Length: 375
Image 1 (tube, helix red, strand yellow):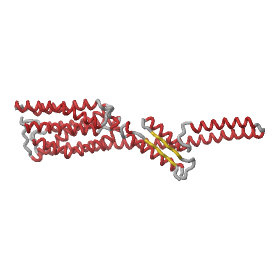
Image 2 (cartoon, rainbow, N blue to C red; image 1 turned 180 degrees about the vertical axis):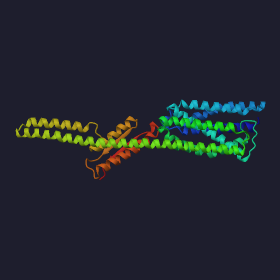
Image 3 (cartoon, rainbow, N blue to C red; image 1 turned 90 degrees about the vertical axis):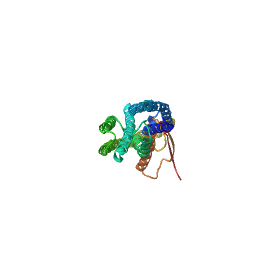
Image 4 (cartoon, one colour; image 1 turned 60 degrees about the vertical axis):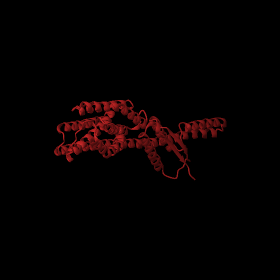
């Protein structure tokens, strides 16, 4: 094998494997990674580089012995490379196996699309391809063109659709996703087995139809996932609104209870005043003052009752999800705007902040709230 062919094998190997690594890690949300995205991708590149010599040795043997079945052996080796890559990648993830399977199958689907597009190109333009090694200049050009066109589209799909919705793919939707991807790959394998080589124009049209059907399938699936995500978000908003309403009701009930107790206390004070029992009156006032101070400071964030209850709820909500929250509240007890406006404003801001935190890795999550009186 000449030096030129040897170099083409290296380029072809990376053109077929690097997109797999990039796409796989791009579709995984950061909260499921045990290491950073860059470290995972770097380790994958090192692993693929370590597996490269095996393909070079196999290509040299097939070239020297002029094996007609070289493509079968090389394809089997590339399958083994992908399996080793995914087994290694799975150890760096903390997510359920069905989600890992979907991520794996989606990347395999990309490779199947590359092969399908190449076959369509060969059939439509009637390209004569006679290979003696896994990668010659024709296949390198086709792989480069395919990745140049399809990789940005696939990367956008993985980052903007798959990664953002992976956390919402659960239950039956998750199982259906696995079935959809397996069926799509099975259709590709069946289609490749049906058509011959070289590909005719009619067979290229058939493969193009499979590709279109595949795109429609994924549009339907991710539309279903998006609807499920919206439903979950609506349910969470309803829950938050109900919680805010409950907090307001609790404050109203507490105010009524305090007023009721205050009437009894004033009655007792009036009796002690009329009897001129100043000692008992002073002790009673001291005890009442201590109890009131303890009640005000217990779990208190600010002096305004409804705002205090609302902030305490979101602080507990954040702590349960391991989101650090710092609160700096400096306001008077009176506001120049309506209580419901204040509740809606603070609630919406906190919901947006919490939702944004849940979409990033745990070590990057934090919320800082500052409310200061101006003027």
